[in-house]
Amino acid sequence: MAASHSIAEKLNQSKPVLSVEFYPPRSEEEARRIIKSAQALQEHHLDYVSITYGAGGSTRKLTIDYGEILHDLFDFEVMPHLTCVGHSQDELKEIIEGFQQSGFHNIMTLRGDPPKGEDHFTPHPEGFRYASELVNFIKQQCPDFCLGVGGYPEMHPEAASVEEDLQHLKHKVDQGASFITTQLFFRNEDYFSFVEQCRALGITVPIIPGILPALSFKQVQRFCSFCHATVPQELLQQLEATQGDNEKSIQTGIDWAYKQIQGLLEFGAPGIHLYILNRSESAAAILRQLREDKLVAKA
Ligand SMILES: Cc1cc2nc3c(=O)[nH]c(=O)nc-3n(C[C@H](O)[C@H](O)[C@H](O)COP(=O)(O)OP(=O)(O)OC[C@H]3O[C@@H](n4cnc5c(N)ncnc54)[C@H](O)[C@@H]3O)c2cc1C
Image (cartoon, rainbow, N blue to C red):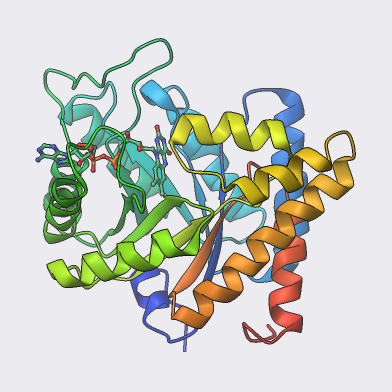
């Protein structure tokens, strides 16, 4: 039987779905890194990879170009991200059609963060205000796309309350999203209670946990202040103790992420999405260990 292209169908196959997230490179050095990392991860039989969409649509072309490279050169099933930032509905239609022509089958559908230097999200006058509107739009234009949306175990920072945020998430799913990928988190309890609350509200789609294998004390602080994820004191202390020793810092991040993943798979998470920041070392170590420990089937 031919492998399915739809992430929703992959999630139906009762085995953990493994994926990583790339971002479009912004320099030659980063371009070399993404290629090297894609090469290194090829042998790990990922179910799909995703590629982000830059603030303000700044990487629109690069998202498509690198999405195609990841597919054509490395044979990955690629899910591009798309945001509402700075786009009219006509532009979004054109981009979605472009995604179709490039042979993508899935889209991570987002509102997006404000462009650099702006504090507030301002919708394009002929565009969309919320991701739910974009989900609805894509489903009208190209119903065959399988759509993922973002979920926030620690609540989206702009939401008035957890309850309202969950209602908005339910609305996104009701508009046609087939799965949720979470913002990164370091405490599994946050994911467990998020899933519980989603289920209680009648959100039934798979909820894929997003995990960041931390690289260093500084990186985790910078990154998490940006995405409002809580870093447990214990992890911070471990990373602080390894400052100056790159290898030890990376191993600390791998160990924390691996323990998280073990707990998540035991809980019944439908897969794991790794935020890899275009680096393969931690992801490769985690994927190898998962197979050695038989937490996922040997490919
Ligand atoms: C898995 C994942 C991938 C991401 N990839 C990217 C990327 O590639 N590029 C990028 O720029 N950013 C990305 N982000 C970040 C994301 O764009 C930001 O978190 C953004 O601030 C919110 O996007 P959203 O799609 O969750 O928005 P929405 O679902 O639209 O929610 C945004 C806020 O509005 C509220 N809200 C929603 N609907 C309503 C309503 N009807 N009435 C009132 N309030 C409402 C929500 O509660 C929330 O507070 C990603 C996030 C995740 C979790």
